[in-house]
Image 1 (tube, rainbow, N blue to C red):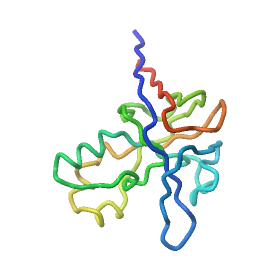
Image 2 (image 1 turned 90 degrees about the horizontal axis):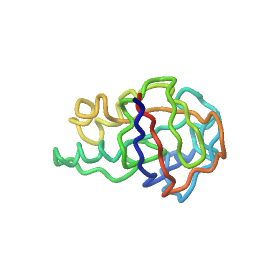
Image 3 (image 1 turned 180 degrees about the vertical axis):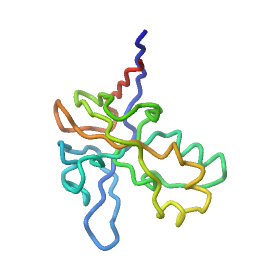
Length: 150
């Protein structure tokens, strides 16, 4: 039986293409099949176009006394429900935009520069990559996230 998990978009981020790779918290993003417009990683790898992270990842870090500011995990979209059980090829909706999961987020060396425990702690819980497959391309803070469970 199919069930639907529902949550919402809490925060949105764009990484600027400057020497500091500045992360900007923004009220909306404009995305297409190549990623997020105005983001440093736009049109670099459509299998890693958009990174979605759950608030659960931040809570796991906080439970281990690791303080992270929102956006520290490199996400473009921070949501309040956990999508990590989704597999490549499955979809989720954010507002009226449909996203297809392309892969789990691999851990990067940057996490250990924040805290040496983070890579092991978030091994399977850092985020998922997705790409836009249909619908309007503007995603806003507060948009509803629908995940279909099988």
